[in-house]
Image (cartoon, rainbow over all chains, first blue to last red):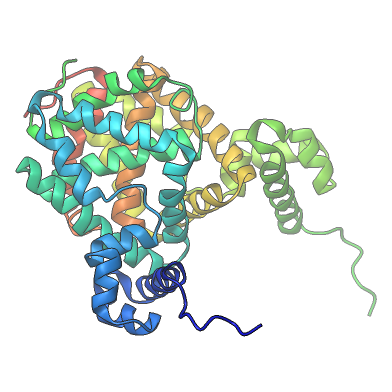
Amino acid sequence: MARSGRRPGQTETREQILDAARRLFAAQGFHGATVRAIAAEAGVNSALLHHFYGTKQQLFVAAMNLPFDPAEVLPEVLAGPPDEAGARLVRMILRLWADPDGRAPFLALLRSATASEQASTMMREFLASAVLAKVAEARGVSRLRASAAAAQMMGIALLRYVLEVPPLATATEEEIVDIVAPVIQHYLTGASPRP
Amino acid sequence: MARSGRRPGQTETREQILDAARRLFAAQGFHGATVRAIAAEAGVNSALLHHFYGTKQQLFVAAMNLPFDPAEVLPEVLAGPPDEAGARLVRMILRLWADPDGRAPFLALLRSATASEQASTMMREFLASAVLAKVAEARGVSRLRASAAAAQMMGIALLRYVLEVPPLATATEEEIVDIVAPVIQHYLTGASPRP
């Protein structure tokens, strides 16, 4: 029987684009890899890539299997009542990491970034533009304060979910929120945590 | 000419002990690997191992090439004027990591801990007993607070020296002390950082 003449399906084209994106982001960093070059590498035109994945930022989120786009979610979380911004952010990150499917892509990024200079460049550029710049802008604080808050949360995730060091690994979500949210609140607003 | 009949030199014996320690700590964790088993693995008696390396904790520090024993240094740093404990700790850690030879062993531990369950167990047990317990005891705070402080400093080290994310990577030591020391002080004493 003759094979049907149809072209490679959408699913296949999408996978080709994601593969090409992973290769080029890894080789050239988040800034260095252009959408045009990724489209060329995947053998599609840029318009089709935009149609499937939107912006370069959104393409990166899809290629790395991130469970959401930090650049979309962070401003939402930070836009609510300012008094509870720290607690909302800590809860969101703890819930995300508590789910093995949620933390797997971040862990994969972290693992490759600690092992390879290229992966480190990619993660650095993405963190700076998709996370730190957004937090600093949403809260009107310096990027250094936003970075200190990010460092606090990455350290908590590392100790709780990667190294699994007690008591951080065994504490409840609310016990951690009680201790850490005032510090995140302090970084993002300048408020003093209660002693 | 006949070879001299002397036994393997001290240097060689010391290296054998460190190799055996690295193998057993990696395979059985910090708690699981006993000094007796490490001595047996190295083909020496426990008394000689103690003579060369002291306690199991000191043997671990030597085997991992750590630049100092956290269990000795942390209580000293934390024992000075309480008002400046946070600043002293932040400065000590930034200076340690600023030196490539100082950070290399910690980076090696972190890299293997994010890649292997066994290395993660080893690092977890060492962190819990050599770092968190000592900080909590020296400052009379809960281990959860000590852990949150450790998470803050590990996150700073990760962003500044591994991922090299600006502005944390480009800030001066004192700019970081200004922002982070009040938070470490808060965790270790309950004091409120100034806004």
